[in-house]
Image 1 (cartoon, rainbow, N blue to C red):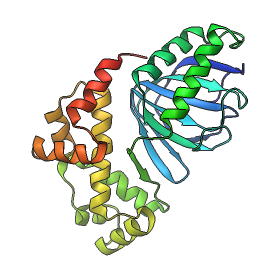
Image 2: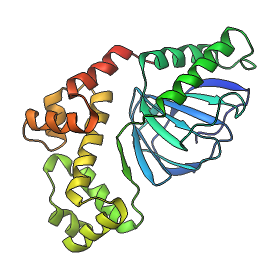
Image 3: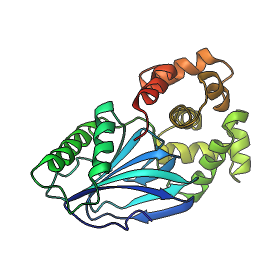
Image 4: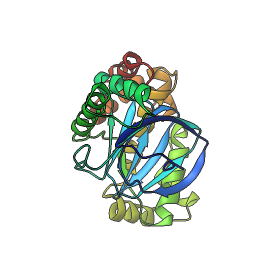
Length: 259
């Protein structure tokens, strides 16, 4: 799905993918993936990440990643030979693109498709983009959750995610997943290191970040869509999770524009 690419020392390409179920891929080069439209899910090294627009994933060569596309996705991809940039510290890191990184991705896309960057302008652009991406990857986004190890918990979390606007309860989710409330609590503690309610809060925040980054949706609409009954309580929870208010977070993407 994501690994059908040519192989110069570094290259950039714009791609569009249809909705697709979970699929594993392994790249033989370091891989910077930026979502331009749509949201995809990535899973590696025991963590699940959300990748909405204006966010990027840096994947170290040889690391297996499970990717799910709940909807069609447009993406900008940049690949680096292992000798072109140092190996990323993490196998998979997802982070928000800075304005500088976004500009470098845009220019790399313009230069992509040639025989590969040399020592001139193209080489400088790809080298700078690699350095910036490596630096951003050191402080990844908090929008992740531990991967469930059992089908029962995965089913329960999927049901939780689907029911956010309706303000689900642990009892309702356990029953729908075929579990007792005690069994659901045990699975969450053992596999996530969280209570179900803490997992619910994290899932709400991840969904809110997706909506704020990719949808023409206001802060109040996002709050209600993620199960909050007041904008103030949503804003407080979002600030605790993301380190800034929803309005500030949304403004970052408005300033960046398209990749």
